[in-house]
Image 1 (spheres, one colour):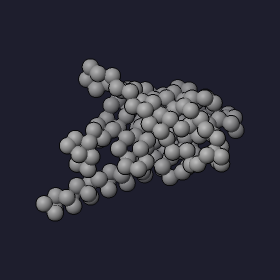
Image 2 (cartoon, helix red, strand yellow):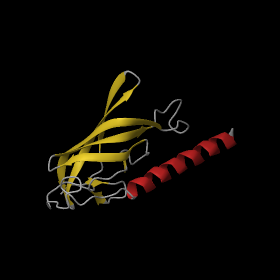
Image 3 (cartoon, one colour):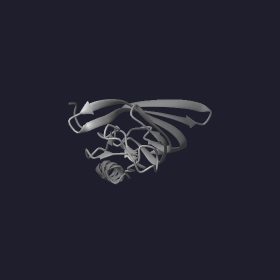
Image 4 (cartoon, rainbow, N blue to C red):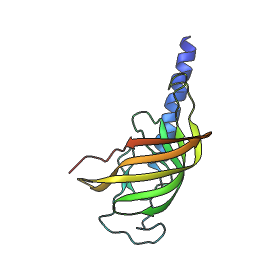
Length: 152
């Protein structure tokens, strides 16, 4: 029994480390519109779990405390002053039978909206992610509050 618990803990720690590393290495475009090359100083960024502020990350961990959800292979179609929109693969832990032993499930073709920018001591940060994805015939909407690095 102890070996099984240790093995599950090891898998969970490895998963958290992987998602954290992916989030920390998220790409950051410098364009206000994808690939445009110009960005206004007031354009909100999104904070990674390590506190780094990025524009248009291809990978982003949404639940920093437990790494149970993330965006992967994200392609942004718009990044503005009030919201950002894109298509992504949504990785989520269904926690069945429990979160420690459940593998992430991946949903391709999900849509993501980042919105509700807030002023922080380090500039504007999006504070909410809304991910819409399909599992079989059912459409799901996952709303998560994002880390912002602290309010102004």
